[in-house]
Image (cartoon, rainbow, N blue to C red; front, side):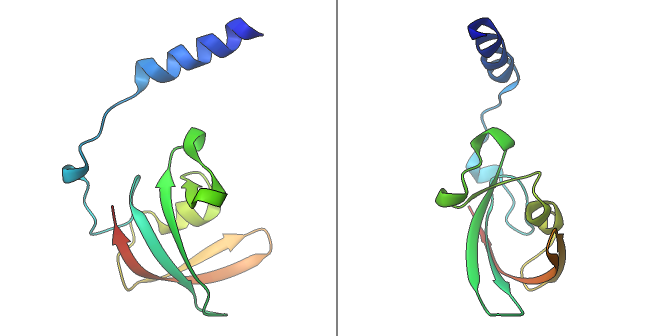
Length: 100
């Protein structure tokens, strides 16, 4: 069991890359960008950073790239309204801001 955990960590480290923040484009939502969105139905404003699956932590505002919300937001720009299909139905989010 412990060997399996060690093996997974080694695989993660072997494929890890250090990213230069100055080269991250904030024109559209992508990995490691912080996105502020507004639920158009109720006006609730939320802010999330799009991260890899292993870094996700909803309490800290870190949203895994594989979640329905993150998948729907990827590639969209500030001002766009994005339809997000979640288990409870369809939600529309307006992208208010994209930053690092």
